[in-house]
Amino acid sequence: MKTDFDVIVIGAGFAGMYMLHRLRGLGFSARVIEAGKGVGGTWYWNRYPGARCDVESVQYSYQFDPELEQEWEWTERYATQPEILKYANHVADRYDLRRDIRFETRVTKAAFDESDKVWLVETDKGDRVVARFVVAASGCLSAPNTPRIEGLADFAGPTYHTGNWPHEGVDFTGKTVGLIGTGSSAIQSIPIIARQARHLTVFQRTANYTIPAHNRPLDPAYVAEVKASYREMRKRAKGLPAGIDLKINMASAIETPDEERRRLYQERWDYGGFGFMAAFSDLLLNDRSNKTAADFVRAKIRETVADPATAEALAPTNIIGCKRLCVDTGYWASFNRPNVTLVDIRDTAIERITPTGLRVKGTDHAFDCLVLATGFDAMTGALLRIDIRGRGGVALKDKWSEGPKAYLGLTMAGFPNLFTITGPGSPSVLTNMLPSIEQHVDWIADCLAAMRQKGATVIEAEKSAEEAWVGHVGESAGNTLRSTCSSWYVGANIPGKPRVFMPYIGGLPAYIERCEAVVAKGYEGFAFG
Ligand code: N01
Image 1: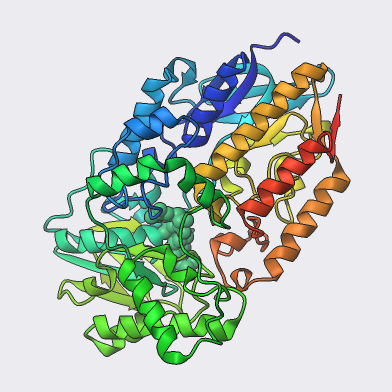
Image 2 (image 1 turned 90 degrees about the vertical axis):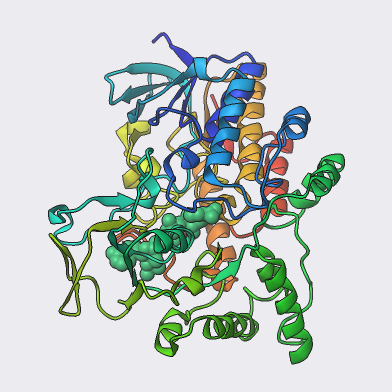
């Protein structure tokens, strides 16, 4: 069968854009298929009030081209969604990417044809495209989770999902708003919606930890300093587990005297951001150490929130850092506003949405607008919403019925010539996504170039290699406290989803070393045809 392209790339977020750039550089023909009207992926869709990245802007950016790195100017410590989207568009213009992207088109099906060893890709616009390879750059947090609450369709007012926010924005002035969820998206949007709305009622199923961002405009002298030594910063970051350049204190929290421990937490709290969890090296290994950090944050909540009952309800009881840590600007203080009410629903699920609000614990709460800050079907959702069929017509959803199985989070046995960027079983969501994306894109691009050189047309993960890697991913997760709570990392937010810790927790340096060793050993664990 004649191919239309060498490679079909699904998604034009940061992963798909860089993949296209690399493929072009190697002389492969490629087409990117993107559901949105523009590039940017997660930053195209997540336009809720207050959306910004909680990895510092100078680090949450591409590093593949030093010129790009030097010419782009970030304006704030943590970039806003509009600024990141502007950056994504700048990259698309700078490398002339748009001409190979089919926008407003969603891939609905991809099936491997065993006789011709090609992928047949179908879209919601009726396209049928044939390609040798498919690269899924469809994102880890891109399939919005709309909760199955009875009556949702009956709500008379507008319903908004933070992960698919109207492009024209929403003005809540004078409105009463009900908001479900207290994850990162809620924690960023609540302070802003609270300032706008007549009244905001927040429905909280699990209280969450958040660290102040202390966001600020970037000092030009600091930017100049970063730019003068960008390579060194990137190198340091890649040598650290999360791919973020921050200082990790190697001491144990529990072995540090109380006063010194408090001083170190305060120092990190005052600095702001994720570095709080690097105050000690055992916070996610030892529950007694973890409790010292959790107690510190709980004390901050009690200091900030005036009403003791509200403060108590807002104080999380689980392991800090088990669910993804949040970074905020004025979150706890929002609950001191007279127009904000917290409704704790940890013991009782929402009974139903009504035309005028929702009912929980037998009480009706009325509001004009409903905001679902209910997150995503993480890591597997975007892939499983496509009907992906490998050898023998086997569906990916059947292969993954007990949880995702992939070799290095890059490929799946039984699905030749299909790659996933930051797929389950890779560090992905536990790291700064940009360096993780670039590492995967480079690995895939180099692999395709190596195949061309040796005249191979098919690559497939061996089942034994996949099983060994999945086993290693599972064992590594069991060594930390991170797999112990009901987070989206384990699929707990989606009813019926298998409970498996999906990302690889061994850290970016160990993972990169492993990927490089696989290549050095002639693509160990892969069969070529
Ligand atoms: O989603 P979440 P998110 N009834 O899944 C609740 C990244 N991100 O969009 O915890 C009632 O964290 C749910 O409750 P529970 C980041 O990686 C990054 O906020 O499951 N409540 C939870 O409180 C982040 O972790 C950035 O008990 C229901 C909330 O909804 C990830 O995206 C910004 C419910 C969902 O929280 C996801 O964040 C934003 C139900 N039926 C996001 N269903 C930055 O870089 C769900 N909930 C800053």
